[in-house]
Length: 196
Image 1: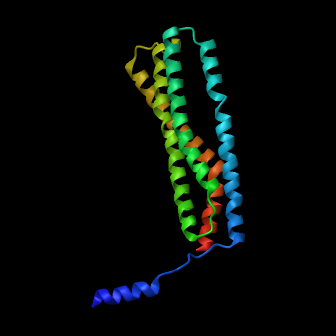
Image 2 (image 1 turned 90 degrees about the horizontal axis):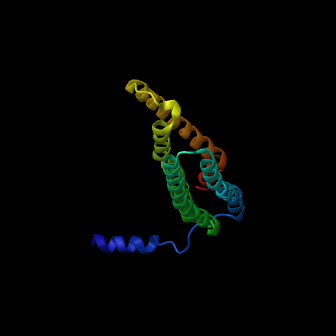
Image 3 (image 1 turned 120 degrees about the vertical axis):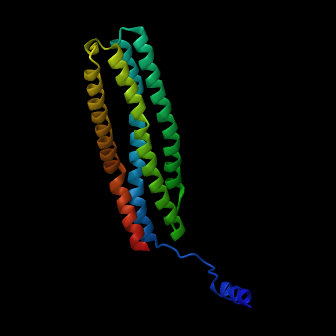
C-alpha cells in the first residue's frame, strides 16, 4: 500500500521543465566570467616567455657544468608542472566559455567549477615548493658563499629560508588569486545567491 502511495505522489510531483534563469541574470554572470577568461589568457601568455628567459640566464651566469645541469633539470621539471596545470586550467576555461547558464543546475555546476579551480590554483603553487627547495639545496651545495662547516648555521639558514619561501609563496598565491579571480568569483557567488 505504501509503495502505491509513493508512486502516486511521485507521478504528481514530477516537474516537466526546469526553472529558467532570466536573460538579465545570465548577462550579469557573463560579465565576471569574461574577465576571468581574459585573466586566464593573460596569465597563460605571460608564462610562455618566463622559461626561455630563465634558461638563458642560467646558461649565461652558471660556470659550473654540473650545477648548470641540475638547474636546467629543475627548470624542465617546473615546465612540466606548468604544462600539467595549463591543461587542467584550459579545461576550466573551455568549460566556462561553452556553457549557457540558463538553469539552476548550470549554476550549481559553475559553483562547483569555481571551487575546483580555486583548489587547482592553490595546488599549482604548492607544486613549486619541492622545486624551490631543490634550487635552494643546489645553491647551498655549490654556492661559494655557503661553504660553512657549521651544521647549526646550515640548519638555521635552511629553516629560516624555508619559512620565508613558504610564506612568500603563500602570499603570492593569495594576492594573485584574489586579484585575478577571487573578486570576480565572489561576484558570481553573490549573483548565484540572489538567483536562489
